[in-house]
Image (cartoon, rainbow, N blue to C red; front, side):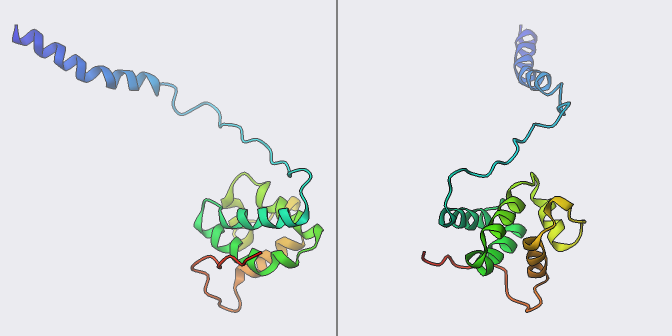
Length: 144
């Protein structure tokens, strides 16, 4: 009788593992999930665009780009022309992988022709940090 009780107890311990194993039987997935293509927000005035780009420059999801882009935005965003704002918007939002942006800016990967522009040149120069500025924290936000 004790043996039968033991086998039921053992099965109750194994059953969740079997269930989980069945769930992951098709792992890894056969294809990557599709990331929707970026679309520029419509009917956005220049002030709102600058505010959005400042926020997006600070909240990247990876520290390296957060520090690099937030200090870049602090230095250049307020004086950018409409054309430069559009280039910067495309540059930080169109690539689906933040590591690509980082490697392009630091010169570890060749920048694709689609992203080669005036703002990319400014950003590459900024990344060199020739003035040896401390960039271990993001710049403080300025009142608007």
